Image (cartoon, rainbow, N blue to C red; front, side, top):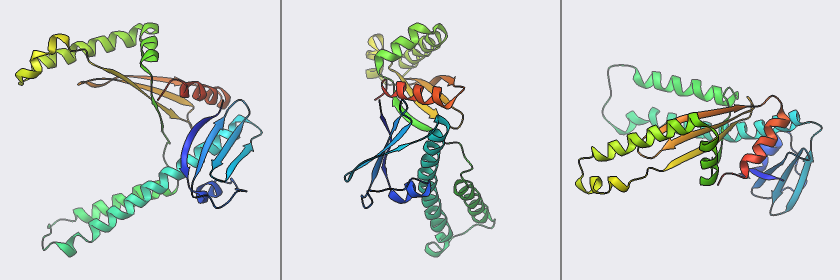
Length: 229
């Protein structure tokens, strides 16, 4: 099975990470990962190209590099815009402060920008939200998670009864808080993270699953994509 990992990737990003494109000229490219065959599938309106890697570590490295370049470029653009707007603030307003807060803020923006330029950050990929049936399975398999979720749902109902809104309190008896489980991947650490949220409470439990090898991690990633939307 191949799954879509990155959508609408610019050609220059693929070239930056060492993926030369034979079918050049497409505006955007979609990147699919095929763990069973160690392949990156590059898809565009011009067709499909496969890149086969000799081992899973090299495939994972390329996945990380594409993601980091995508994220870094986006954040650098936003930081450059923020620095420009902050720097030119005094041009538009006849107001200022006695301190040097603006200089400190710009210095921090430039420091963070440098971290992004040098890829000095951990890439986290949001994979999606677990389908309800898989959440139920997880809760049935793990008593600790289930206990934490049930306790949070009880707290959510207590908050409902304490509401100042009479209309809200009216339906508290039938209120059943929703449970969400969002899944994230940290490819550099070969970890998959499941964060459980309960409606009106927020995050209540974080499940971290680590893998020893790139092969195990990529195959687990493939499995997760079957369970999220």
